Picture (cartoon, helix red, strand yellow):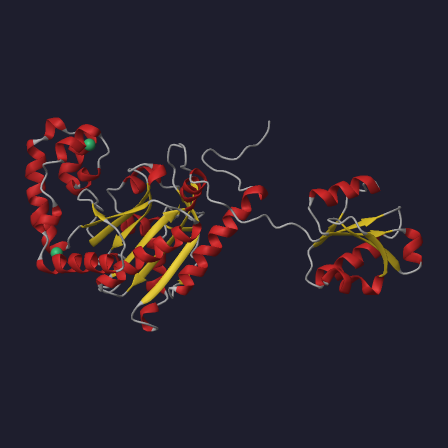
Amino acid sequence: MKIQVPKGTQDILPEDIEKWYFIEDVIRKILNKYGYCEIRTPIFEHTELFVRGIGESTDIVNKEMFTFPDRKGRSLTLRPEGTAPVIRAYLENRMERISKVVKLFYFGPMFRCEKPQAGRFRQFHQFGIELIGSQSPVADVEIIAAALEIYETLGLKGLQVSINSVGCKKCRKDYIGKLKSFLENKKEQLCFECNNRIEKNPLRVLDCKNIKCRETLQEAPKIIDHLCDECKDHFEEVKECLSDLKIKYTIDERLVRGLDYYTKTAFEIISGELGAQNAIAGGGRYDNLVEELGGKETPGVGFAAGIERMIISMEKQKVSWPKKQYLDVFVVKIGEKNNIVAFQLLQEIRKAGISADLDYAGKSLKSQMRTANKYHVKYTVILGEEELGRNMVTLRNMETKEQKEIKINNLIDELGS
Ligand SMILES: [Zn+2]
Ligand SMILES: [Zn+2]
């Protein structure tokens, strides 16, 4: 029986790896430019972190986590997202002592036990940024601007920014009361899941993708009309700052993050190719999350984005990928002997900073030359037994097909020129 990759996972093969290098490189360069430092947290954490940091009533925690006991029976979970681990690390390492505002980003695999479907995987990759310790509306805009700059640098076009405000603990209470009484009157028009949510988490009803629910919710009271003065001012400043920076946005009143620790700004970046329901990045403020995870009251804002979806969008838009890196030099050996000599020479070439390889399969001269062609090398260095005896090698320029005999000692200079 052949062993295959587990359902919902995939290999990233050598022919695709340049894309990943390119994307990772753009993300790191831009985020470093914005003053963010990378943090790498473990792939698994105590389950409790995600239950508190994502929310007990969410689909992720209820249905999608890979949870397993360790050998002593303690519950561990493969991370389904990056924010909770970053906040855990922020608190555990007391990063607030170093600086009042801490700017971090992460990049890596995440795990969710979803039904596999196009563009969704059980092991997928995300990058995200967290700006911890600032109340400023400008911080919200920095997050959006950084995300947009990354996508634009990658060559994506036609991106749309949707924003909303989800209020704060103070103003949301009042609103939720009004929303609940609206929903209670519409029970028959709402789907089964929405009916379950009315009591537990009515905000999440606004998120429902069901067409009938969406229609019914058109008349629902909007949180944006029920913001307190502080939240209203914050939202106005975010909008003003976006406009001043000429970042186009639309207000999406349905955009909610249904948990108590999400506050004020919520946003999504949508790529036309993926359809309106498929944001390529989403984020917002979480002024109560640090406290929820056991820290002092500390504001924060961030976003997360999936890499696989990004690649799908880039491919649909026919973005040009950087050229594949090929080898510079291939060392070709004639005859049975001189294996070690050939390898020593190969290492010298590599130490000079030139990429090079040779054949380890014992191929014929003709077949070695074919391999050299396949690698698109600029030069082949041909080692003949008789020439080596005279400390000479043959250098062939693969573009011009010119071939000359040179002294071994001059080889590196010739290759470098
Ligand atoms: Zn408020
Ligand atoms: Zn529904």
